[in-house]
Length: 95
Length: 495
Image (cartoon, rainbow over all chains, first blue to last red; front, side):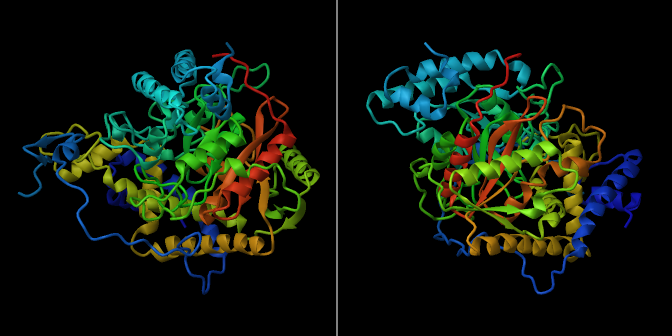
């Protein structure tokens, strides 16, 4: 199947990656090559097969429902590109 | 004094304990070698101050006679591992300036055992690549060159810096990670040993995520014994990683008996690919003969779903990556794009991710977004997960029939030139992982062992695949193969 530039534009938008309009046709061709490769999976009979979940059967560990961490506001904000008064700062979200 | 950087990890450990040299002397030898090897671009963040401090402390433990195997051993750490106060950016611009206030479980375990961190190692951006050419730091370079030819070659990827550093004696050993072959392919391209353990053997906590159901860290070392020593140091249950296995970690080194009599080695016919170079065919054939001569029984086996492994991988890995990489939004850490007057929050996300991610990462995030999008989830993602179950079932069946380990080539070629694949379509590059990716999908342990040189004088490796959780037995077979192959070649120093 062929990926058109509209689909490429939509996928870029969903992925929150800005792609300039003139780059879209090339991107669509790249998707096409990769998806064409993936199409081979349609040859496999997967009727009745359960998706794999783990290497060997394992019970997922449960932990105590207790607080183990906290009071690290400085560390949490340490790497923020913009933080003010103990918060992450972003452009205005609501009008 | 002999050149300390030439020692294996085991030799360095024994020399430290025997007081033949000190941990600070060993560390200084490596720091000097690293500074003379900038042409390889293996180290992207050097940490000599940390290394010297750790070496001094390690020496006090050695002096007191209380030193674990890795005490005083200088290691290189892949940039994917978070390390306190040291840049950890997965070779991506989007993590520019990120200095985690914590360590990954693996690096913390290594530090507690007294290991010395020399610095952070180059890699493909977010571990997406097979040639270390997607790194924001520029290419890492293979210390090996073709005979009489100065063309710079790839060390492989994604753990290219790790491979280059170990092969050029710029660390005693290095950490790597492997999602589709990222430890084993670079190990094969540089004539070293690399093992990807069973999924869940090593904690993933604090390792920057690519594809969570496939990612697994492991050691890259000068020989099999070193891999056994370092794997033990990296392994173990971690409450912070719910997929880490609560199983005892054996003394892998003690399991290297060299005796593989009666072991059954499977040779999968589906790995004999069309167009495979004769040299790879010969290498595989020779390796088979070596194991037979060592007393193993050789059996032809079939893994019928092998050809669907790469397509399944290129659905599952991008899907998981698109989800994992959603966190890079320019808000909490790393880089934020410069915004124009009036730009809203969506502009911030889109501009940040467009300038922060390189082309290969963008491509995979978008492919992942597509295969997970409404209407395609079942057709692509769920189908791939079912095919994955069939690939695993192929392995389960041969193991149930008595196969102890499987021998295959590690890569379809020797190291290629940097830039040689620049104009190939992305799928051509993906074919590098054809022999290794099945192992990630099935969650099994796999090890690459150097066993020969090609006609151009470049190293070639074979891969051994083992039963789940049986890394000890697997390494013992690898040890046997290593001894029989007697691979001792080292790259001529040109850097």
